[in-house]
Each structure stands twice: as C-alpha cells, then as structure tokens.
Length: 447
Image 1 (cartoon, rainbow, N blue to C red):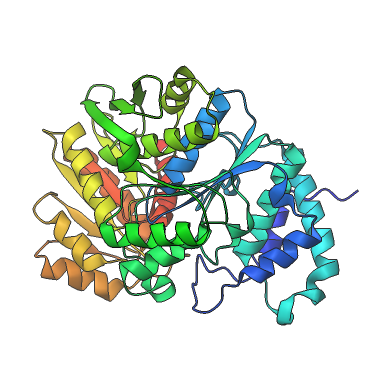
Image 2: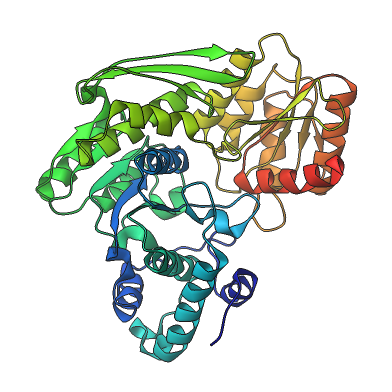
C-alpha cells in the first residue's frame, strides 16, 4: 500500500495554483469544494465543528477554542493558516501534530481518488492549492476520528473553501477594511463577505462591531432564521493587567453566560487577546452548556500560538528580547504597539517591518513614527507578493528614517545583531510570512 509522507504530499499539492502566494480575482467558487467533498463522502461532516471568520484574531480564537475543548478531554482538530515553521501547523491535534500515519493515510486517500475524479470537475475548473489542502484537513480529521474540529476561514467567508462545513456555531471576529480587491472596497462589502458563513438555523457569535457591520450581520442572521449574539451584549466586565516580570496577562471576565467570573493568566498577551479569549470561551459555552468554568480557565491558561506577540531571547544578547508578531492590519499593529509599551515600558526598541502588497501601509507607517531607534524594511519572504515602492514611500511620508533591502535574510540577521549590540528590544512585524523567515534565521544564529 502506498504511504505518502507530508513532504511528498506538499510536493504534489504545490503544483496547484496557490492564491496565498499569488492571489487573483474571480477565482473563488464554492461548488468546486462541494463537488470534491461529495466525492470523498463529505468528510467535513465527520465531527462537530466551529467555523471562525474575521479580519484579525481568528487564528487566536481557533487556538483558544481548541485548547478549551482539549481541557474538557475532547480530541480536537484545528485547521488554520498560514503556518510559521511547519506545514502541519495548519492541520493539527490542538497544539500538537497528528501521528504521521494519519497524515499519510489522508494523503493517500486524497491523491488516489483525486486522480480518478479530476476530469469530472465543474466546468473543467482548475482546483487550487487551498481547496486541496482544505479537503486534506477534512480527511485527516476523519482518519483521526476527532471528537470536534475548529476551522479558520482563509479569505472572506462566503466563497472560502472552508464554507462547506455545517458548524454548531459560526464565530466572526472584528471586521476591518482588508483584501479590498477580493472582498469589496467598503467595510460593509467586506462584512457581507464575512457574513457568508452565516447558515440557516446555526447560531452566530460576533465580536464587537461598528454599527454598519453590525447591521449587515443582523440582516443576514434574520435572512437565515438564526440567532446572533454580539459580544458586547454578553460581556458584563473584562479587566486585564500585565505581569511585566513573566510577560503574561491576568484576565478577569464576567458574563451572564458563565456561572461565575473567569480568572486566568494568558500567555498570549495583548488587550485584543483578552477579548479573543472571551469570544472563544463564549463560543464554547454557547455550544457546551455543561462545560465548567474551571475547564475554560484551564484551557485559556494553556493556550499558545507562534508569532502572536511571541517573545524570545536575542541570541546575541540574552538580556534583550525579540518580539515576533504577525499583525498586518492597521488596528492589529496599533494593538501590538500598545502591548509592546505595556510589557516593556522602559526599553528602547528597533523595528523590522515588511508587509504584503494589499496592506494599508500608509496608515500603518504613521503608527511607527517616533517609537523606534532603528527601522529596517524588507520583503515578507520569497513567496508573498509585496509593493516595495509603496511601502518605502509611506515610511518617507511619515518622516521615519529607515534602511531597506530586498535581502530579507540579511535585514533580519543584521537587525538581530544590531539590537543585541545596542541593548534594544526588537519588534519584527507586518506579516506571518516574515515571521516564518525570522524563525528560520533564529535557528541558525542559536546554533
């Protein structure tokens, strides 16, 4: 019997069109996924699931939901993107990888059957990398016989490959104006695409939203004859305080859906992570009424995720910290800067920044003004498209002195050495793809 390794699977699937690297318009159809799933006996329906969308924080919410369910003793699969170091981060068992046999069996099933059915595809349509990887996740979870699964939307919602699932609850985190070439040029149009995950009779939980977005979600929920919960209607009180010594955050949450207030230490720091924790806890409580507050607290205390304000020691000077953060929207970067000043109030800091071509770099650059000692700009790695000229112009207009190079490996390595030498902390942010490159370089420097 054939036994396909993960690396062999990746070699095969990398031959398909990958919109994460080279996004294109008008190349998203849900009927392709519906066709594929039907030919594989609908593996997306093998276990109860959560479906999480939003402009930011959805990966964190997925990790938090999974950690709570795992603390309850449930075998929980997580599908999220992108990965930072290892492809298997996308398809995992809570915070661990599945046994290699699970990945191999799912790959064999996908590879063998796909070659038989590809000629039947709707309108001879090309299948994308993300569609195949999503089907692969469904097959992995079915092979592993998970109790529950958590799916992060890749892009938008309405036409996203994950939108074939029938979740027990749909969760939508904060909405921002993003991916406008695909989702629309107003926040209401973006919200309408995100609202595409709202399904007939399936409850919806939304983060706090601006009024126009809230209106879009309420109208879609009414159209789908389902109940929608907004976080601000459920949340009675949320407080957090920083522990600058161990770089954690104590969070206290009071809500009418809990039998008592929650009190836990969160290793994923940032005010926004406290709200993500509430959203995750509420999603689980709304679907698992009998889960105890003790279990929720344990799950949230155990959760971790790479490149979410991840703090590591500088290998050049262990007294200094490197903060790796995948924030890439105006609001999320602003919150990252707030966290930086809260956890390191007296420390000077340097910056390495890179972002994808579709980001609002003009407004992002303004937020960095006057904060950093040394600023270095580069590309977000070799696989993600960037508009370098737009980024450089934005930093010039914000009157920020910077160094730029296309050689992202050299920029990162030099910045680590410089910040260590000058006894500065170093923030590296703007892209999860940049974060991935940082992780690789840190491994070489630590050796």
